[in-house]
Image (cartoon, rainbow, N blue to C red):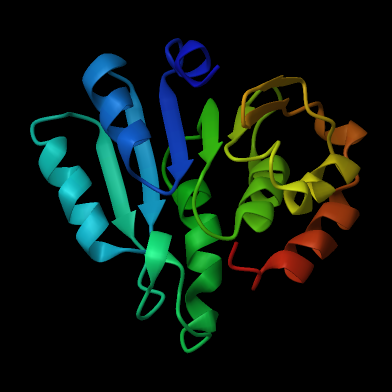
Length: 176
């Protein structure tokens, strides 16, 4: 589903860089916006993508991180919103967003709140982690394939925008 969804888009954004970033950079040729918490990992991906035009990877410093870029403390909690919001503060709007890093529920809800109608949100590791499925209170999934779920952003007037904003604040500091 990932490869089928990303291929036709002009702007691809992702929470959490890695193999998906490298694949899109090498095979799709679209603009890429990526944010990650692990500086060494960001440097590895940048090196793998040397010479790729349109790649913007942002390291969000959330303090020391452990496995999979998870902050080891709330020492830099004031910077957590930078992670969820960075993609949406750029000069372009994504056509596809991959949620595959930290703060997944908050990242999904932030994307739902800020994306244009028709934007596709791919949520990785979704089907085998029921605690992520709280997002379906705000938008039902359109499709499932393996561990991934696809959501398509509807017209804004059909969304509970106040409820989404409140949920963003509730999940702002949930690191998984």
